[in-house]
Length: 249
Ligand SMILES: [Zn+2]
Image (cartoon, rainbow, N blue to C red):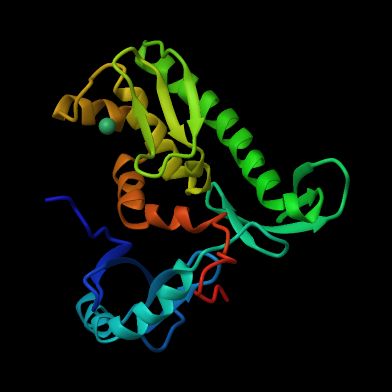
């Protein structure tokens, strides 16, 4: 069985059958136990006063499961790339700040992603920017990790895959979804380590996992992040449908 609870988080079963990973923060200052949603991230956090037992805190959390699921559902709505949208880059959030301009230019400025282009091109410009960022970051990490492993990879491609975050072919070509650049660093790092490890072991054996552990910062955390939160990366950049009989807003 995979380990689903760590000292600072717990896996909570929601009424729908889904699982939510809830952070647990022990606090000296808090007087009462409380559950809240971390803004921007959309992850739940249980604040546990130090004098209260973990067991009691978890019981409180379970009572709140229904409330929590309703609140979390809000974070599953599509986030189109448009002016004002909050979008993740390696776990931190940037706000799209659009200005009209003839030629596309996208760059990070503090917590803003400055996007200069015609309005109709925002989504395309931001997607292209993500792909470039992903390409650079993945290549530099894959180089580093494959060197650690003493193996070479063939071609490296960045795609918009929907079913897999990454893959490694038998000829040593690596392929990744650009969306992994939106994940927290520890998860991003794990995913690259996973595919690079396949250069040595084309399977998911114990030997393979030992290599992944050696190549990643925190294999367990990274893997769990994708297991419980990976689906969230697909909601970014989705266009709200303007046709059909469904209201999009
Ligand atoms: Zn694999």
